[in-house]
Length: 405
Ligand SMILES: Cc1cc2nc3c(=O)[nH]c(=O)nc-3n(C[C@H](O)[C@H](O)[C@H](O)COP(=O)(O)OP(=O)(O)OC[C@H]3O[C@@H](n4cnc5c(N)ncnc54)[C@H](O)[C@@H]3O)c2cc1C
Image 1 (cartoon, rainbow, N blue to C red):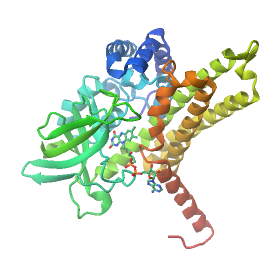
Image 2: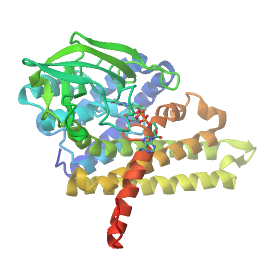
Image 3: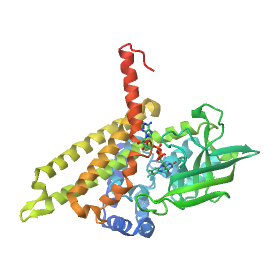
Image 4: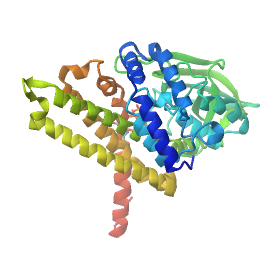
């Protein structure tokens, strides 16, 4: 997606900030934190209507799909504002994994698939999910999987087992990564197929208990089984064997989206930690914030958040200039760095709140549980650290004329 001028972005950021910080949104957030996502859905739908009315729905999409045509850098600013509440991205229909599927379908699906599935997804009339990871294989090595799709006449027949499929509960379709040619080189073995969830043979086994919570609807991660699932060849997204390359193309901008969302979370956590530091008294006339240890936590958090934002905006600009492949180092750096900042800032905010920080009175405990995954999904820290370190050392070896594997 490209385009979107500064004035449009500023208007959208302002409109969305007003909605996500409104008393109505805070009430819906509280309902979600205490009663769960599904119970809060009526209030969430009302807020979605407000976002639609403000012209801020699916802002990442081009205007012909009802969006604002924001560039990646412009959407990054929007993503930060939405990240201030766990309900933000869903309200604007730019939540993962739907946003990635929208980009996949927009970029690589046939006209027929786009008309049938992308248009209603963009309008927020249905949801989708992305089924790649398998319980039997290390997700950190995404070219190793057992799910097969075998051609049979005009169809593919899919058999496989997936898990941690976010938002599968209630989704209308999933994009499945399946091996179509096991004899091909590892990165050319798999293909992406669009599978309607009501296709015979698709079984939603369960919503997985994640940190003690199974969740529901979009806010859940499912185990799925595919048994002799038959979809037409026309349900293929991109070329046969291009699954891995397309998933990578989807993940580059996706990491910017996640990182800016995490910075939004950090900003909210920062505001909460400051509020608590100045209002909670250790003794009459002695607020927590008088203590140097607390001042250090606040100062470190401020510096880390500001530095992380600059790193992510720079990565977004590099993706726009050089493409996902050209910006690979920057993408790896933001993924592990910002996930670490997120964890540190949330930890400090909870520490400053004491026991209160562990309750559902603020979103801190929810984020602590649900965002621990940030250091695991879309590539665990270690994979990104190794990839960046390897690239830097390969360059250093070249500079110094040293043979390097
Ligand atoms: C909240 C959440 C949502 C998710 N949503 C989806 C989804 O919608 N669709 C989907 O398909 N998947 C999803 N996933 C799965 C996710 O993509 C995988 O968890 C991720 O790829 C890691 O794979 P794994 O869990 O199998 O860990 P493994 O690959 O088994 O790795 C385990 C650990 O080993 C270490 N490790 C791994 N590789 C290396 C290495 N090269 N060097 C050193 N150490 C290493 C890391 O510490 C890593 O955490 C989700 C996961 C989470 C937590």
